[in-house]
Image (cartoon, rainbow over all chains, first blue to last red; front, side, top):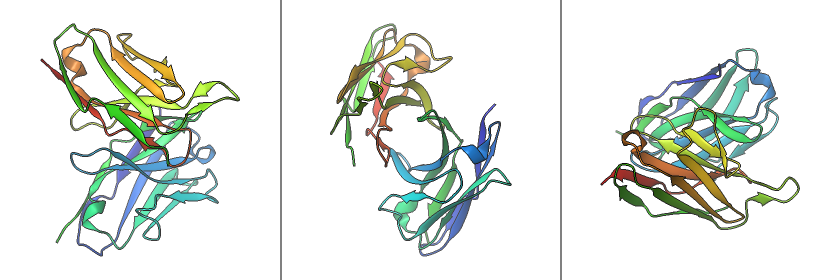
Length: 117
Length: 113
């Protein structure tokens, strides 16, 4: 069974940093592109970032480019999102997502990041 | 980026009645090489992560009740709940995975009338 478990969220001050993790199990993690999607409280879904299976290629939404870094450790079956220079508008639940034959079918339960002083 | 626009923003339907949600993309999400529409529908209940209902515009995910159906092609798509049940109260999102970045509709809130 595919499982994606996010962690690392919490309260951080504007300008601060936080690293999110997504622990994956139930599939061959090193074979899949992985994604981060976020959802601000009471709002819709926003695509954040993606990383290729070997980590060589990454993508960032314009809203986080230059501030967030996606990475992965295939030996630990873990996906990361390093977030820096955080802003109030980064407050959201962050989901890691695995695709299956192109379809974004597997979502974690999410981890809440709150940026506030 | 491909813009996804859903309508309506919300709707209230009586139990057992039909609910219809529309989704329009700013450009076609039909990949002509394989004749597949890269369009998914998700259900999100309060406090839960999005749940995949429909992919390739009309393929129901395993375990999803058959009262949920998807249709459409190119730029215009529809999610239909044929007989609304109490557990269907949720926000529904369409999403295109044709291009990067994935983009989502703004969501449609479905309630019981």
